[in-house]
Length: 397
Image (cartoon, rainbow, N blue to C red; front, side):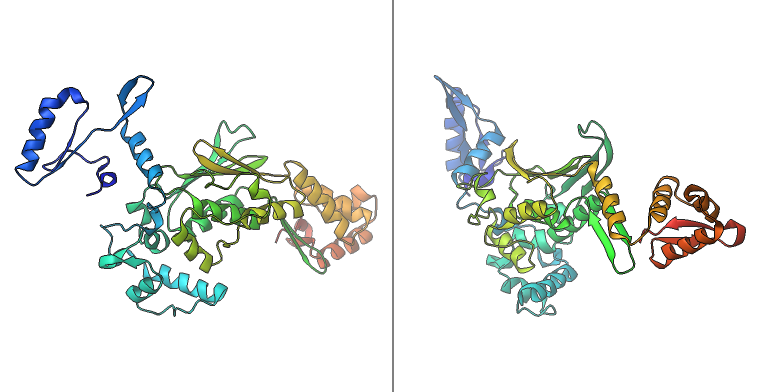
């Protein structure tokens, strides 16, 4: 058995941990006992600090082994011995195959038997055991095997983030995690939607395509050996997404802003996410995020390695978003100054009557009735109630 597989295990008939060479006599006794039974292993992790030799912690020793053998230790290609074909959700696999057919013309029929489909996707290896990637993409309960595969999503108050307005722990497969994260974001950022006579005007505070790309990269390229979760924080003025695992070498932060190669940390997983167009294999993800932010007249994203992970920060428009939307709204609509004044009144008071319309514009009832009818025809306001109880509100959808 390889040493890396013994990290964190308890002593047994074939394994013993020793804290120092001062236990030499006991070490010799243990070696003798092992040799007379089933064999075994004695492990002493130490490191040199200055002139002293000190014991390494379990976490430190584990990180050292992973770093030393990182080229051969790939989380996504490893098998999880306790999983079986029964841990795969067939509907999630079929959704994936339909999506791959739609996006990349992938040629595996969604109705292909479960084991055959997984085999053709190269997600079953020796002894018909499932790779970790199979569980991440199609597992019935991925967090049962990998509790770190979560997104901790929070909406924080203000720009300092001292208090939470909302917080959720998102679970599921990788496609489900992205869907749930996007739903959480869309529930906590501003959305402007209205209609004029000819079209629907729909704009989000942040470009949704950029947000999807940030999440795709976090889920595809995170360090799945780490026990940390992806963290997504929404503030009044920005969104931060942090994933465990710094930018893979030799990529630099500066490379992300120009043409660069794709260096996936999880190659097998990235190959499968490519099939459903969650990621591209040409190193264009960060460039796409930058382009989306520029096209929406927003500050370019901030990329940084921080706390052993990689973080993307999207700077939003802040309070200027609502002002810009209202300016755009009134500019696009073919309405007169009196109708603009009525819309501004509705934004403050939420409803308006024909009598109030006349009063704020200093016009008679006939003109008020006519212009309110024009606003209804342009799908800007709608009428509520009948007779004396009639009033008007803004159309919001």
